[in-house]
Image (cartoon, rainbow, N blue to C red; front, top):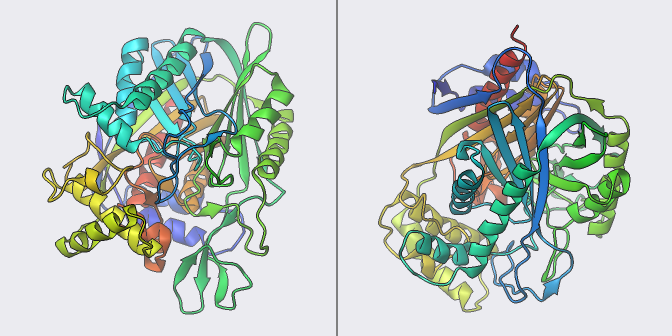
Length: 523
């Protein structure tokens, strides 16, 4: 496993140059690629696995899904106040894809959850590896980010204590959640069969996604504004209108078995207290209408940390059904002109990138704790102050092996065992899964700003590149661009890592993609 230096500044400059135009296509691939290898602000550890030289063996792929809907009354995630589920609008699922070629195997499972904590992904990968023989390093666990999914943090904290032999509670739902996700991976592994693959991209013409950050006349940046506000100058960034789709068909008869859809839009369109997968649910209906009722439809969320569904020119918002149905039409269009993936040699890559954590002071913690307790008791507190307080307690838990106060008294999501006291850096992962020279899938941690995802896609040497955020950990919270930290507002306030972290992820991803492309084109 080789070590290289990654720069937190060089790719940042390329991203800034790519952000000059408001809605234009991003012609920054050359600038970003040229930035690679310059400077050193941190080290990333890289590893790859591929299916050997010569003519590749047949690629085998399997899909499976399992229900992960919690019971009524379980806490609902997505906000900073407690909500309890009152029923189910549509089921929550874990949907797995397993790739198998020669000695190389990999699994990617996407769950209808708000985020994947490091404790959850660690338990799933450990158990799934034991059940299937797939190396845990080649298993990716991603979340769609639905805001009508369970707040499992406290329940999982109890369950992981039981796994460690320290009984601290029930953790019944988390035990079932882990088992169901693992079972989806196991079932997909058992069902692998020779396939042909097709991929395509299409531009979403009906506007359903919008940059939610705005440059103000005083030079600041604010989230959640409208253009009729006289202090708004313009949106602070672009969107990514590209939708990508991967379709797998059985080699024996051409019958579709599964599809992976990728689009960059925040999953917070439903509201209320009923369990819901959000707009991927109507997308699933469209996929099955186009490909067959038994096709597994997997949705991987693109980089949308600064993207939502609120049109700044209108007071009303698009409904979940409208968004999902419109995106479903674009999926159908893309499937209709998909191209086969020729010689799909499987290449799996992984980089461990140490992202610097922000500091937290004693005075911040002294102010945070009573504020969070007041909020728990129902007192009305300033939203931004509550966000900052919550992050402060999370940061102390991550940075200090012995935090000055028990974090379970103040927070629910964000409770962590694996990385408790990890120090001043988070050892996050960037993962890639490449198929020949035609398609690459990139997994990134946290909620990633759209500019960072666009930088990877535009500089990728693959015909189609799918970037999936919220993979394997959510403890970074938001991951803005370096420039965004200067503007401030909600996403910056709610980021756990230091400026430049996003650019480190971009550089690690591009190094993995470039290495995979070089190997894939080798004689």
